[in-house]
Length: 247
Image (cartoon, rainbow, N blue to C red; front, side, top):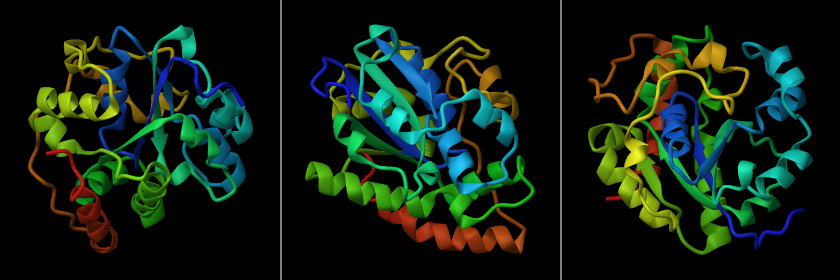
């Protein structure tokens, strides 16, 4: 595995899907000192789980799917020799077979969002959805593992708080991660990025039109009984993680 003492700050940001995660990747990617990687374990997850996701075959064909090689890259130098290496991770991609030793080379943060918002957004893109798909259970497990590994709870930010006060929340997040805040994190050019996963074509339409964090919207009320059941199961996890949100 590459030298973990290399002079680079590796930031692993953990969230489920539809959590403002791509906008957060745009924010960090617009820093002067930062390289980003987009859901590096996605192809591994699809190949190992057999999950039937949009663009499944193209994702596996276009991206590295050996988790060991990915782990080596994540614990190594940042692309382009940048001093900050931001890694956008989906919690549900971390199957039990995927080793976690590489995580010791990173500083970790957790991005959460109200389950109703996640489910409303996710259901608009896929016909079926489960509690596993939105990653809440896996996020809480990873949070506990990081806390045990580091000896303290990692920083948590809520997507709604980011939208309401992006400068304040991102400043606190950067401070918790040991890096300086940059004003460039608040706005970015529209369009795609070379660092985007091939799946961007299906999932990133809205963020590709964006030039910054949007305004908060009213909390959706889910009408579908199946989605309501998933929301009820996810809410206690959301509340437990929200108790650690940066104030």
